[in-house]
Amino acid sequence: MTRRPGFLVYGLLFAFALGSMFPLYWSFLVGSHQADVMTKSLPPLLPGGYFFENASRVFGAVAFWKALVNSLIVSTVVASSVVFFSTLAGFAFAKLRFRGRDPLMVFVVATLAVPTQLGVIPLFIVMAKLGWTGTLWAVIVPGLVTAFGVFFMRQYLLDALPEELIEAARVDGCSMIRTFWHVAVPAARPAAAILGLFTFMATWTDFFWPLIVLPASNPTVQIALQQLQSGYYVDYSLVLAGAVLSTIPLLVLFVLAGRHLVSGIMAGAVKG
Amino acid sequence: MASPTSLSRESQGGPALAGLPGAPLPPRSPRRVAFSQTVSHWDFKVSPYLYISPFFLLFTVFGLFPLLYTAYVSVHEWGLLGGQGEFIGLDNFRRVLEDRFFWNSLRNTFSIFLLSSGPQILIALGLAALLDSQLRGKTFWRMSILVPYVVAPVAVALIFGNLFGDRFGLINQGLEAIGLDAIRWHVDTLPSHLAIATMVNWRWTGYNALIFLAAMQAIPRDMYEAAAIDGANKIRQFLSITVPMLRPTIIFVVITSTIGGLQIFAEPRLFDSAGLGGSDRQFQTITMYLWELGWRVRDLGMAAAVAWILFLVIVLIALLNLLLTRRIATAGGRR
Image 1 (cartoon, each protein chain N blue to C red):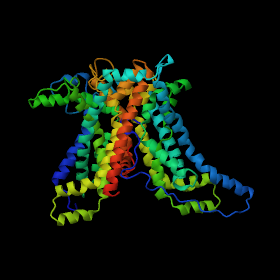
Image 2: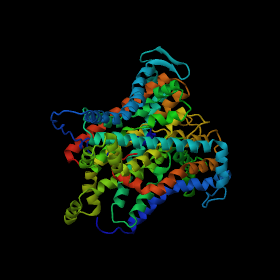
Image 3: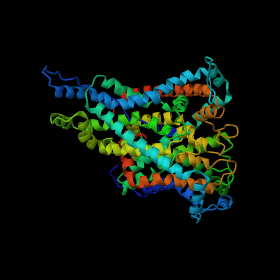
Image 4: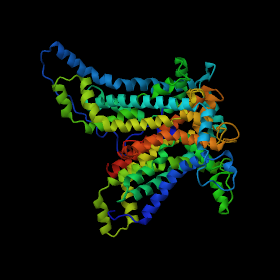
């Protein structure tokens, strides 16, 4: 395994990279032509000049601006909150001593395996009782802290935060919350960034729950996107232009922070 | 709430709690306490509980309670609009189990799951093996196979719904160009499952390849050197060193994709524009069936029964997986 790889390896990897990008490129191709492009005998090979026209039709057909703003709000709030509360709880579980700590941590890990998605029916009933259905509260509040986040931050802080630092802070008379703020938070930063990134993306791409609680008039991006495909006749130039539009924010994020995403997955503790 | 294919997962390999320090409290010497020390003492005692309470509070309200309450709803008549009705025992369960569309959706879910997880793991292993060499531009290759992960399942479904179009889809055009018959991807059962499995595979193969890659890089290199000296070629080395060493990771990926895969929703729902899983429900999955019962038929009682059945199925399979993992982890030594 020390030999440098040959052309075959590069060729295969190139094929995989191509396959990974092609559907997105195809989406842009169709989205940049007029609607009749699908019925032509030859598929389009080069982008056409209609992307902006199709994009503006997307904004006209559904509440896409509102959806973008909503998704941005929901994903940002959920990601920040998950990072904050998970770091707080992860710090307590990793570095503080208290009665019942270990069984409670076992409980947290056990909940990882519970498909909480299956609680949607009562969750819907509760949201209706609270008067939150149709509002962003319904999609924000249940996601504010996750078992995975707590587990992830605990695992990281276990190694990344030396006991001596905490001791030193306490000897200096730091209260617990100051110790957290000035010692644990700086140490947790790399993991917090990764957790935030993954949470943001998972929230942005979530579909099942928003579909249940949000109406067409107050959608997230995924809900608005699927409305483009309603009715018997599907205008693929419109639909796929929308698919590209909805992916652009995450693509930008990916270009900026993709390498952290890679190292996050490879750190092994993340399954997104 | 995470999307079906992206529920939170724990770390790869061995038991997650292996690192829990169970150190006992150091004995404290008795001393006189001033007021500030009392405050500090309380700070020391209470703060940890305060810090973990947001999780437990939220999980109780939005995770645990709904799951338990699902059981309560499932034994009542319960309309989406009318609300709670009479207690009817296991009647909802009976109606679900007698409904042929329930069994149909269960079959479809397993079929799509098997078609996606098997090939995906094999391809991801191969891809990881390709990446596990001294490549130029490592980061570029790793990032490029992760691109599909940033495309939301909804967008994936729309794009592949077009690629797999029955009449004008690119794939059928390709098939016809090389002289084969077009396939009715949206009409016939198995082809529709294949198309949906392709979406899942496309989105997750690169992701899982990176997990495998990380595990591969943890295998001591001298094992390969020893094998090479014994005359084992690359393929032999891959089969008799890499794959056995990766077994815990492979099982981890299988478990996580089971929990996600059995709840698959966006991809089959948006594969056609009607959103019910085809004219004869040929690709309706169990989560879609649950949605249809709850929000189209508007029978939350029956939908809750489906949720509980699916819950039991997932727990059963997860336990089975866990047993398997345990045995392999203890037999093969922990990573």
